[in-house]
Image (cartoon, helix red, strand yellow):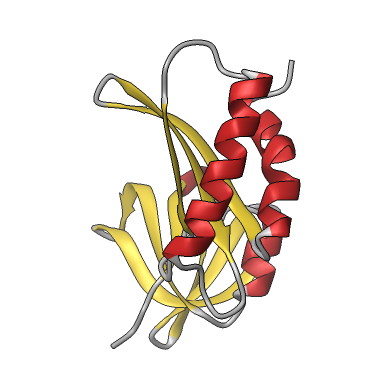
Length: 151
């Protein structure tokens, strides 16, 4: 059986495209004893509240009809955000050369967070320029890699 996120991605794809958006990610997570189903949208020029509302209304009805999730959950639709997580190879390709923050499961050189510029991605391994140094983090060490806004 397919994962909930995969089922919802397929279910929501047409509605998201009709709203002129791209489905960036789908999460189905448990937080503080409550299940959350979240759709994250992206769009050239940015996602606004009207985009989220349009997608939410249509996808909510589709979820009610298909009923792919047992039990109760909270459904949310939002922008992927400026500091979005990079997860798929295509995400890394799209944002090559961009500022990122890499968070590790365990400290390396006394640190668990490294801010730098994304320089490479190969089979899950992430290479980041941190100052004058290029560091490669194996997939098994990386808890999260997200875009970083510099001010």
